[in-house]
Length: 217
Image (cartoon, rainbow, N blue to C red):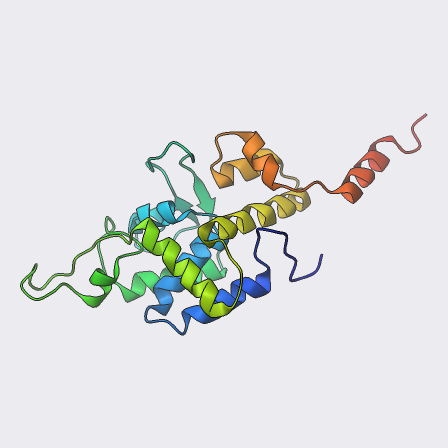
């Protein structure tokens, strides 16, 4: 498989790296890298990214854990779920960075508004910062602006999430998983929804039939 594969509606690895590079040119690089990777490497929607609390990624001792928990998340379209985080992966590193840049309690939003990052205006909550989550529309706008800055064509969070699902679907074949495993990670309520995003592999079908039935009496 080429390193920089891409299907229609998905991002290549090169394009993801361009998005991450573009984050370095923004006012809040750590926050924006976390947004990009929560979308591309965890398959979260802007609404889900907005919903995340610090406890969604932290263990009891305050460290970044081995998964993102969406337990308790509301919404009719996608199921609550947990998504593994690679121990030495770029997403975990981005989460550590964003948590370290903005102190807060476990119940504060993971991705906070620019007002919280800049500090509360004078006269409001003296000595404290306002911990307000970034709105889903703002997160979608950031992804769109980063794509524009990086010079790539991208349908905001939709293409980032599709990229995650397709990549995981391909790797599941290698790991012996199934479309059901991809469905659980994507949070789809229907397996049919997941299957529509996974492309068929004719060569894999041929190998499977050959392995099962070649040389049978």
